[in-house]
Length: 164
Image 1: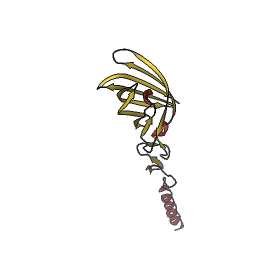
Image 2: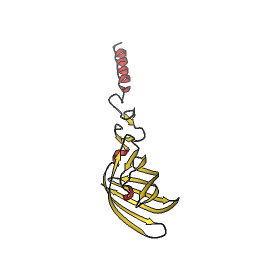
Image 3: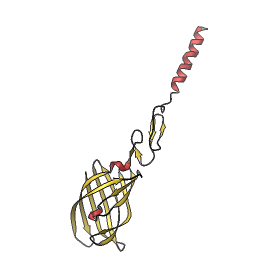
Image 4: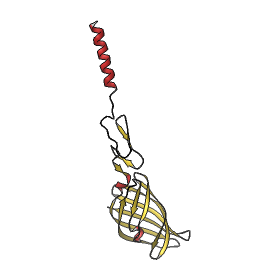
C-alpha cells in the first residue's frame, strides 16, 4: 500500500512540474505576447521583450555622402549633415535635410533594417521634385537609393550613404 501511495505522489509531482508556466516571469512590451517563454513581438518591435522599436536603430546624427547621376548626362557628389529621428510610430522615421534640400521627408520601415520612401515632394535648388526610393541599415550606416522626378520624368538617380 505504501508503494502505491508513494507511486501516486511521484506521478502527481511530475505532473505539476511539467505544467510549469514558462511565461510567468516574462513581460512582453508594446503589445508582444509570450508563448513558451519567448516574446512574439508585433510588427515594428524587436528585442527579448519587444522593447526596441525598429525606428530606434535608424535614429541619430549622420554625415552624408551623396552621389547622383543626372538624366541626359552628368553626375556629381555632395557631402552634408542630416538627422534621422523617430516619433510614436515604430515603423516610421523622419530624415532631415533630405538631398541637401533643408527639408524633411518621412520613410516607412518595411522590416527592422529596410525602408521605403513613398512619393513626397521636395524642393532642391529651387526645383520641385518627387522623391521615391528604398533604403537599408547595416550597423551604423544607412544607405538610401532614390530618384528625383519632375513633371513625371526622372531627373536624378541618387545614392546617399549616411554614417553615424
